[in-house]
Length: 116
Image 1 (tube, rainbow, N blue to C red):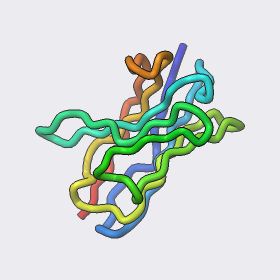
Image 2: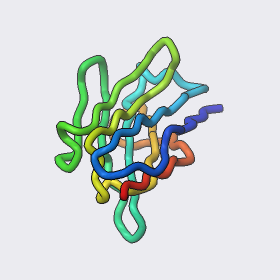
Image 3: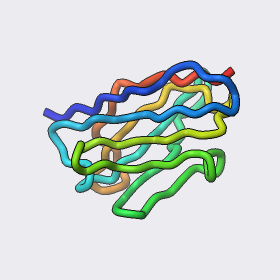
Image 4: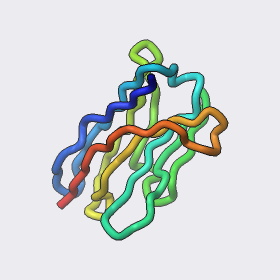
């Protein structure tokens, strides 16, 4: 049974930082394409960052240079370090896993990030 459990969201002022965590069970994160998505009210879901292997990461243009995705294989956990946060980063953030890097089959429950 696969579970992805996000944590680390919260409320922060613009310019601040947060680190999101996604603890995985039932799958090994280093064997999957892992990603962070976000969805704000009234907006489409957006993929924020993806990691497909050691050192192989991609980012949405809106977060490049501010967000960093990383894995800790010893903890089987995915992270998203978010710096220089902006009000437009406000959204529910989800981690997701894909076996083929195309279709994300497993999703967490989400963690809310609010930037004011």
